[in-house]
Length: 296
Image (cartoon, rainbow, N blue to C red; front, side, top):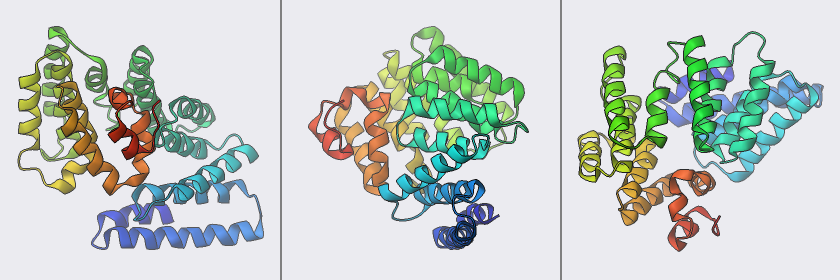
């Protein structure tokens, strides 16, 4: 309940302050539960989830906080291996910190443990995303197909065919397919035109254009998509923007966008260092300083 209230508070007038207050209340409950029953898997699971969400959305996220969250979640599944929600959150945490092979393993454990299919859509979405990050696009397509068949209206899966193209497609046929998929999604989807999801889909098309050598078209898509969008809405899309910049050969602009990301969320550095989108930057001292990497 505390987590649900915290996430609702994040969208409310108190924003992050209300979110943190609800998370801290939930952490107080788990502290009392663990005092009464040290090592209780349910309490460890909840504390791990609350700490992870605080690291994700709270102010001043630290590496120690995400390490504590991971420790709680691993302890919960170590004590009781059938805890699907703990496995699912652990998979998401590992994905967010750039450990893609481990995220895949945890996601599969979550799916196997999810007897009531309560975590199914989010787990399949994470497994799909993990395969993209591992550049195993055939397996990503398999998860996309399975997810859309089982959960056809889930917002995390509805655009996965376009997402695969954004990550891997190139050539005239891929460009045509990307535009077709975008048009179909726009017809089916009632999201606001300025929503992050709708904006991101256009950037996925821009990626296909850039990878296919259509640099001017990719720039035009990026420019049109960015026009008139407030920074607060655009911020989650800066990675996509940086990737398009890199694909069209604008290395300095890509690094400028990545710098803004890390300045706002220092905890993203490890993920960016491991994201295959930015492999071409791994030997660049500026990128190494930015992400804390020493070349990979």
